Amino acid sequence: MTIPSDRVSGEDLEVWASAAPDGPVRRRGPASSRTTPPAGAAAPAAGAPFPRASSPARDDYQGCFGCGGDSPSGLRIVETRVDGTSVEAEFAVRDVHQGAPGLAHGGLLATAMDEVLGSVAWRLGGRYVTGRLETDFLAPVPVGATVRLRAWCNGVHGRKAYVEGEGRIGAPDGPVAVRAAALFVEVPEEHFTKERLN
Ligand SMILES: CCCCC/C=C\C/C=C\C/C=C\C/C=C\CCCC(=O)SCCNC(=O)CCNC(=O)[C@H](O)C(C)(C)COP(=O)(O)OP(=O)(O)OC[C@H]1O[C@@H](n2cnc3c(N)ncnc32)[C@H](O)[C@@H]1OP(=O)(O)O
Image (spheres, rainbow, N blue to C red):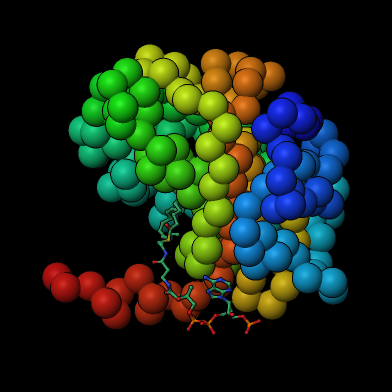
């Protein structure tokens, strides 16, 4: 899996050692060291199941903009495969997700990546929130397209989980439209209640 060479010129290009199933990923972007596991981070065991396969708290909750069914304009992301170390999911880009005419808004694509990367973090067993999300937009995504998402964990260090993923247009081997890396931080249960206004 590589980005075509005409898209990766420049000094900001980095070659990331990655746990991506296809091997190292080339990507560009600032501050990527903040979403790269440090030396000493625990790598997920290859083939070992996620500590948290699922949970009633998540399955019963439909309010999430990314995956819930309650939001009329939500992305309604559906997970299609969880193999123990990675999550695959998909959603259809609808009119309400437009930015430029006929094309998906980039912020919604970033939201989709936050969702599928967040699902990997959730499955690690703790309560994680996104601390940092880096996104590369590589190709426009037309309204009507299905975006095939995939995410995996590169390592865990203390409260911090390093998760990466990509979104492809149309098919699991379709063109890569978006790529993301994130730092998730484990938080106590009170995180989700103490700042609520109602
Ligand atoms: C996730 C939802 C769970 C809900 C449960 C219910 C049902 C389940 C449902 C769904 C679950 C499934 C799927 C998930 C779906 C969607 C996922 C969406 C996820 C989100 O969309 S979630 C919302 C956006 N998210 C926030 O709303 C976070 C706001 N934020 C904070 O709440 C704090 O900011 C926090 C907690 C991040 C840290 O605060 P803190 O005080 O606890 O800890 P501290 O600052 O010490 O950071 C500790 C170590 O992380 C490093 N660190 C922190 N931030 C960094 C950054 N940006 N860059 C580089 N390093 C960073 C520090 O440098 C330090 O590193 P070190 O330990 O090495 O010093």
